[in-house]
Structures are given as structure tokens and as C-alpha cells.
Image 1 (cartoon, rainbow, N blue to C red):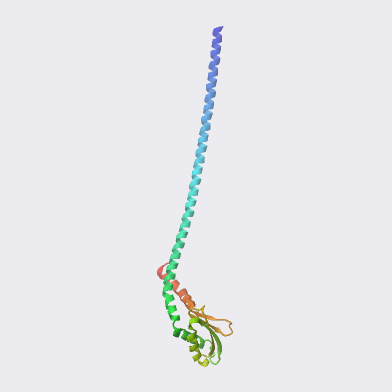
Image 2 (image 1 turned 90 degrees about the vertical axis):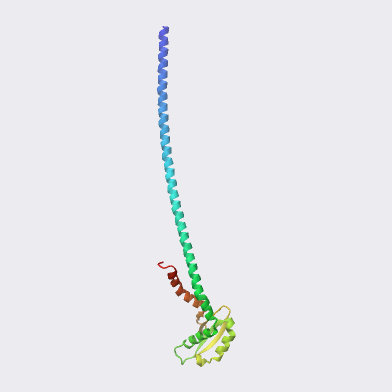
Length: 205
């Protein structure tokens, strides 16, 4: 009887151990499977994060490169523009200034403009001329000595500090004025010379 009890006890023990081992193996297998799944999910997420980061980095690099190229092109254009303006100004400003400081030259221009203002030479017209303030004495004397008949016009002279060289002329009623100032001539010559200078300095552009 005692022997059978021992055998039964041993059998129950063995069955319990086996069942426990089986359960443990199952739990371990499930744990390993879950761990593998977590690992795979983590790897997928890591790859996605890396891919997103690489894409974002590529976009940032592209934008930075684009901004750098734009800035570089703008800088080059500005430098070219400054070089062109410097050359054009050097070529034009000094000669124009020198010409408009020549009273004889300015007087001849005014005479030419006045004489050709009205194609009907038998009709006298009244004109107003605005001149630089520092030329008042010389021009008053010169045009006072000129007869209206000789110029075919009656001239009203006025002087202004705002004009540095050249003159403005128009009907004495002030309806309009045509400008022949130093600045006008500089701008006129620059508008012509600038594209020619660019073409010479930067052919093919």
C-alpha cells in the first residue's frame, strides 16, 4: 500500500513537472516570439526614422544649396553692376561735368535751342530759362547783349541752386519745361553706354 502511494505520488510529481516544463516552454516560446516581433517592429521603425531623416536632410541640403546659389548669383550680379557703373561713370561723369562747366559751350547750346524753338522765324516767342545760380552774372550779361531779333525770342532768365550744370527751358507761361541739365546728359549717355559696356565686359550674357 505504501509502495503504491509512493508510485502515485511520484507519478503525480512527474506529471506536474512535465506539465510545468511544457508550460514553461510554451511561455518561453511565446516570449521569444513576442521579443522577435518587438525587435522586428523596432527595426522597421528605426529604418523608417532613418529614411525620414535622410529625406529631410536631402531636402534641407537642396534648399540650402538653392539659397547659396541664389545668393552667389545675386552677389555676382551686384559686383558686375558695380563694375559696370564705375566704368560708365568714369567715362561719362567727368567729361559731361567739364563740358557743362564751360560757359561758352552752355551758351551755344541755349542759343541753338532758342533759335530753333519755333520754326516760324518771323514770329517772336517768350521763353523762360532756368540756369545754375553760380552762372547768374555771366549769363545775364551775355543774353542782355543779345537782341531779341537775333535770337528770335524774348528770354526770361532765372537761376537756381538746385541746378548744378546745364539749364531748363520752356515757354514763359510755365506750361512746361525741357531739361538739358548735366544730370540729364549723364543719364542719357549712361543709358546708351551701359549695355555696350556690359556686352564688352561680359560677352555672351
